[in-house]
Amino acid sequence: MFAAGETVRVKDAWPEASGPVHIRTPHYVRGVVGEVVRHLGDFPNPEDLAFARPAERRPLYHVRFRKGAIWPEARPDDELLIEIFGHWLERP
Amino acid sequence: MNILETDGERLLVAVRSLLEQKGIVSTAEVMERMAITDAASPGQGARMVARAWVDPGYRALMLEDGAKAAEALGIPMRGMPPLGVLENTADVHNLVVCTLCSCYPRAVLGYPPFWYKSAAFRARAIRDPRELLASEWKTVVPDTVKLRVVDSTADYRWMVLPARPSGTDGWDEVRLAGIVREGDMIGVTVPSV
Picture 1 (cartoon, one colour):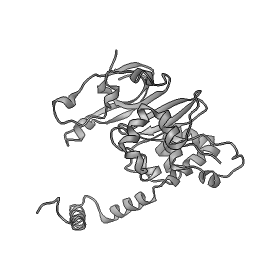
Picture 2 (cartoon, chains in turn cyan, red):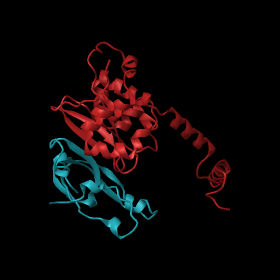
Picture 3 (cartoon, chains in turn cyan, green):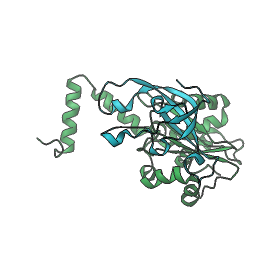
Picture 4 (tube, helix red, strand yellow):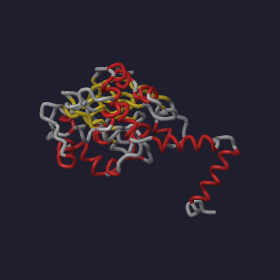
């Protein structure tokens, strides 16, 4: 589990390169560092649910990213707020 | 029989009969869900916004749990995804997008506008939202205000609680709800009088 305010990095993983997947982590934040805003609850893992496999409930977090961390030309203090499952997050 | 080439109406009747026979979904439940879907419109979200503008306790509930706030106004939320509400303030402007597909708070806003699902809106909303809002909606977010783009990627649905515009002092809830548009609750526009 991650706490509110904790610095996290989205895993730089690309499972779509090795077969059919259903992933709710956008490409543009893979490998990017952000900050946990809050735990939104636990939800069935969509990566299994989409294939009608038994889906374990996984923690879902609201994670904030500085716009400048993704696109250098962006206004750096603008931000993106994204729902990301805990198994996609790691401590940098 | 090729299910992909079967007449849609016949297929629907067949599937609904099977669901009923097997005790999975009754016709009454289907009719109830159709009525709920038909009743969902931006007017529902506008009622919530107007109530939040006049009632600080309701505003707090709405920001804490959007689904409970919707139910408090009689909007059915059973079977719907959780609803989160993000407030526009003097410091931050929120814009909702779903870059992966078309997640939208249908329970309180109804069907999304056609452009919400477009690849162009989804790409521009995250990459260059200030330019998008200014060029397509004439919504200029001041430099002093942080723009927060909310990418609706998973199990929640998100709506924006816009700021109450000046010039509305003393207005009642019905009149206030009348100035809240669909775009104001997505964050592409802001209410004005």
